Length: 155
Image (cartoon, rainbow, N blue to C red):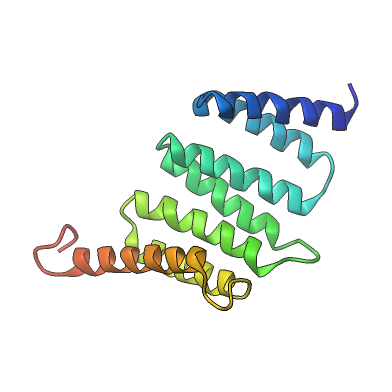
């Protein structure tokens, strides 16, 4: 099977599982997709594949693995020849959500705010999407502040 045929078959199989809500079963397929995309040396596609894996792992509460995948997406995307602020914002926001799920609100808030600033380039004037991301970043910041107060979970 040709490389693109193999990749297309994996995408179709992953899509069928997604429609059935079978997230856990999508994870090994996504790892296979990453292996196939690595052969192509297409930076943007590889970063997207890692970011998608981070999202799947986040959905099944495999947070340490999700964080590693999200950080890998960001690291790979640094080598993209024509990066966009919106894609970078997407990767940053995914990592922020994973960090927040682990209760690491200080890191999450900073990463979410970086994501919002990148999203803002494309969502000007501010739209509902950007407002929702700003609200989520603010919620992370509030959680961080709550935890740092005496009597808070971290105090």
